[in-house]
Amino acid sequence: MPHARSRLTLPALCIAMTLAAAPAFAQSPNEQVTFPEGYENGVHYGTFKRGGITEELFTSPDAIAAAKAGEPFPDGTVIMMEDHRDGKLYRYVAMEKRAEWDDYSVSGSWLFREWDANRVAKASEDGTSCQSCHTSQAENDFVFTHHLMLDD
Ligand code: HEC
Image (tube, rainbow, N blue to C red):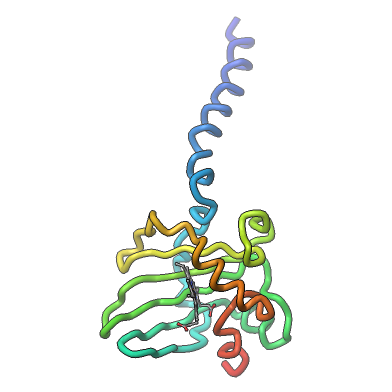
């Protein structure tokens, strides 16, 4: 009975795929933040310098508009910070906001991730320390450089 057999096989396959996919998020929710390709085509809203460190800040036009309007950042906002040390790209750090991530984060709906200069995610960084430091900026939707967006 080929018909009955295919009806049994498909759900089994779905379960197998779900189990295979689950550990990616079970380990650390911030693995859901993927490298935001094309971020540099957004708005370069600021440069932050401290000693030998230069940070270049990027986000979307919609995020800048929300900051200027005094509103929370829209769902789906990504903020990217390139971290250059002594004139060389050292790493990338980004934060991404999604309502569905509310339960994972102590800083609103934001999750945080870090990549090296080759865009390889730093596996040991689960974003916990990032979140706890950024909670101090709760009044600016957890973004330290919110003020730089106002006069961009
Ligand atoms: C000890 C506090 C602290 C920790 C921990 C921290 N940040 Fe930040 N973050 C800052 C500050 C302060 C700024 C503003 C720029 C600056 O001063 O360098 C900032 C800026 C940023 C920005 C630009 C948007 C904004 O909030 O201004 C991103 C993106 C970001 N951090 C991501 C991360 C990620 C990812 C991690 C974890 C790997 C992290 N941060 C850990 C303090 C922190």
